Amino acid sequence: MRASLVRRIKVIDELENTIEIKMWQLPKATKDKPHGYKYSLVYVVGGKRIIGYDNAERKGDHRHIRETTEPYRFTSLKKLASDFYRDIERFKRGEL
Image (cartoon, rainbow, N blue to C red; front, top):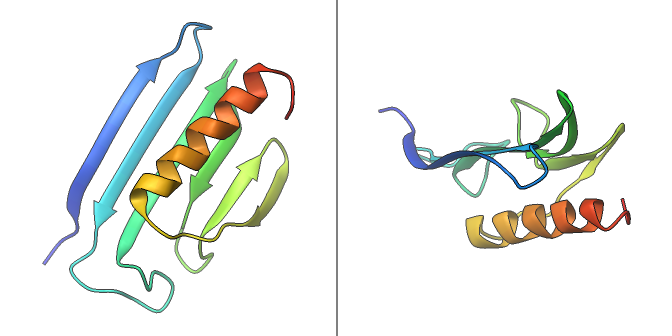
């Protein structure tokens, strides 16, 4: 059984930057995805990823802020999206 698409969004914001969200529910939890979800959320400015949240194979849940990568504590898809949009707003205010 394949993963089921939960959400896919790609929009251009008011600053002409790209927001892309992809979330899938896996048929079963795995060692590197114990919550049972695969995801990729990215904010691209001028063709460069500025903010990203993902759980790429064997890397676990993590986020990218500019050139820095750090662990991310996944609790739910709703919280994931909220944290991602919060970071976008922080970037727009010059806080990131």
